[in-house]
Image 1 (cartoon, rainbow, N blue to C red):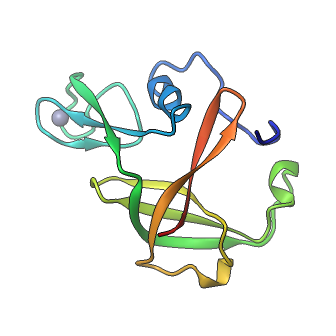
Image 2 (cartoon, rainbow, N blue to C red; image 1 turned 30 degrees about the horizontal axis):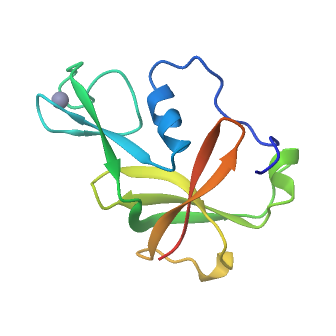
Length: 135
Ligand SMILES: [Zn+2]
């Protein structure tokens, strides 16, 4: 298990806690509106399409495509300083939502827009962080 050396969510956090609970089982959850069918990301209490409070949790397969990315070459936060250079990317999951994450275990210069990636879990104390690797 990795050291608790980077910022992580603090609980209780009613809107996102079910998401973080699922990460302990390495499940990437997202929400779908029961009333309009809209996909809601990031986790929250209401539908961003119709404001309904009737949302259901679904499990993503964790596969997607790099929409865009940036290579971080400078970071003064102690938890991230040793990771540079690293990739921050918007990932389009196949289920239809876009999430911000990292592409890891890869030469940052080899990441490209449109690249297929899949989720990989970075276990922390009490939760796991979804990161992505080339598929
Ligand atoms: Zn809705």
